[in-house]
Length: 146
Image (tube, rainbow, N blue to C red; front, side):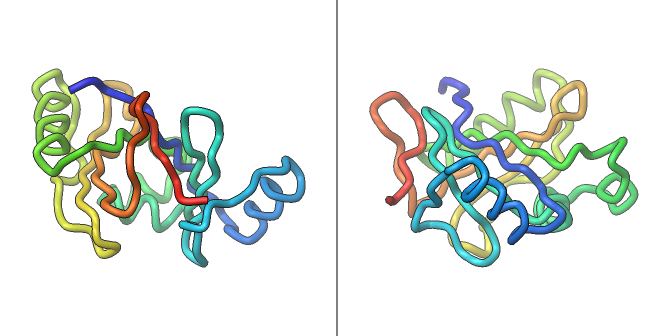
């Protein structure tokens, strides 16, 4: 399996304010996959997602002291969308074998997918994720609904 950066999730303090900035200020068009809790924007071969910072830390199962400290959690997660649950598990296992810290073992997600998180050697958060509602394009990038 090739590691592919498909999504950059920014943990934001105020989702409506952040959406206005990216949509009105920068001209990004949200995907129909966006909702009140999260926003998705096609950005070339990758996707930009905006998600409340506290919810991102909670989803990654970060310890409360780390999640609340900007010096310890930068409020960003990189994601590798995978084609199967087995690919998610394999990516997490490979990262841990290389020295990453498993932040959250892969599990069923409340939104219908399957995901887990690891922190690389410098504490950068990665999500290995299967999103059945999204597909991967021929280049391995995330194909969002319009």
